[in-house]
Length: 182
Image (cartoon, rainbow, N blue to C red; front, side):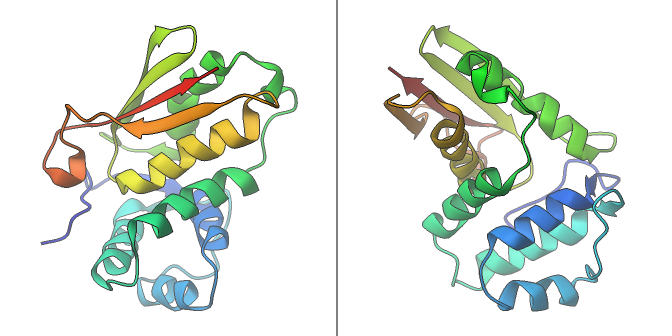
């Protein structure tokens, strides 16, 4: 059974997302997997069926060459390579983290693409609630990458899964990732 599934078959990804993912994965093997699933000559502003990308993620998971840290590293590398609006790092961290769903919605389209909710626990702690079809560990890496790239210099932070909520990959409806900093 495929671990990653779309919520609706009309879900599409913006080409730039696919290109960023491809660039975050080192080696030629990713290009052959993309080619196998019909994703070649990707155009950054074109839209592509998300099922093609989900099939790639499932292949990567099933190949057993992908470990948890591989998906985390990919998420971190995507943030490292991403073009960010000027001045974004000057915003309060809470505002940056609240904007994750806006960025997600801009790069995905369809009837039910999922969502990312940000709940503020206190001035230095948020809970991000993910209902998305991609691997949890990619989003963990994205969260870590956001903090590493955008938190003010000298900020100490922790990113961790909620231990009381089963993750989507473990049969839960959502995945919760906490971020706290000082």
